[in-house]
Length: 129
Image 1: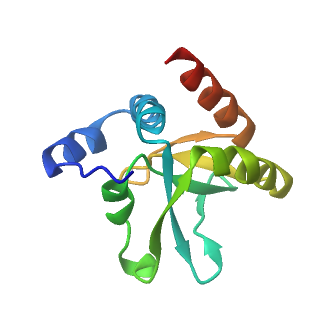
Image 2: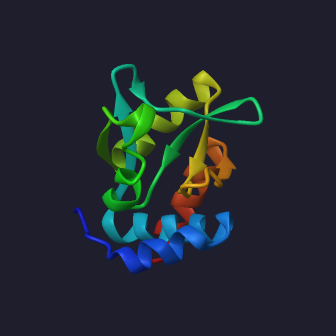
């Protein structure tokens, strides 16, 4: 379910610390059941954080679409259901040694987390509802 977000809230979220954006990401994931990524010709786009490849993930279409520019101008904003994420993505990312950049802001600041730890946090967030 795509939920529009107003630009004021998006700007406020962008200014928050990475761990606060991560908490927001988990909250939205529980509410909407979706995780957003960018997909290009070679698959999901990757950021590099201190030598680690990371798939950036966002809580909604609006925050991900802000990244569709420059070298990612041809990318598509794509939603993945939480069910599909847990069934396919977690295992694939672990096998490939790829981490996650959770809700990066436009300054490329994000909480970097393993796919396994994210999966555990998803489970905890869904169980708490």
